[in-house]
Length: 353
Image 1 (cartoon, rainbow, N blue to C red):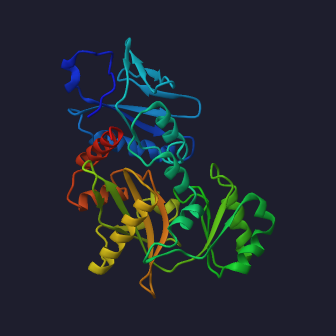
Image 2 (cartoon, rainbow, N blue to C red; image 1 turned 120 degrees about the vertical axis):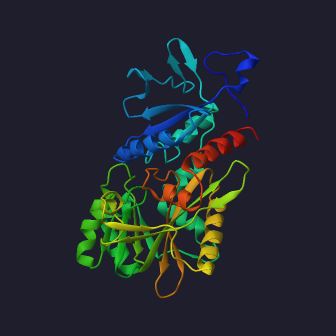
């Protein structure tokens, strides 16, 4: 394992030192609140006998670590290091648990690439691309057995003519969502054209989503979410799927985060053929998009046709105890602590290749 210099130690006897992990959280959007909950859980699961873990908050006004004494210590952005009690802490790896910008859209990954710090998530290009739902669908459209809903991608320049563009090309009901958002913020299901303009305005004006809107024909069926990761040996591992059943019109922000509105079944009740087909598709998605670390793929199984329809991919999936990935890791028979260790070791291994 390749180690950077830590705490100013230079003697060979320090080669057995624990791996220093920057647990990167926070962010510039409303999803920061979820990021903190996710990173708190990851922190609780990481083996402190093996890893020295330093939570690092990325906020608009500052990047910082809060010491055990409650002191706010700024990050040196030249090399993402900390100076604590006169000692410089240089990290071996960044564990990114930051939903939304700049942790999920490639900006932070590009910075880490420039300073040479390994990290646990997809690379800069893949992260940026997958935040754009429309572009992602274009790349995945010809994967065997994977279907994509008919859609229209709208930019700000289309806004004046958006209603006519949609009604000419798509059939009701519509699913309207920001093209670069997360946590289902700004999404609407539209059952009649009279409600379309309000839904478009809501999606266009959603904060930090790039003022682009994706409108899709609504797919009726069962909804699933399924994780996949590359382990420290370089093997792709597909986790068991979770089925999402909600009392709401669709799996929106409230359904995701208000207890009691959604039932989540892990592992999902799928036939062996459906499991094999989903696994094959998800592996191809991971490879096609050049993913790294863990990702989560959301999809529909259309009621009448038994076709899998791609919804979206999440490259920094939530990690609260109730989140899909931890549920699936447990259903797979793995401890979360071992799972997170695999992600760290895989990031370190890939950085030395």
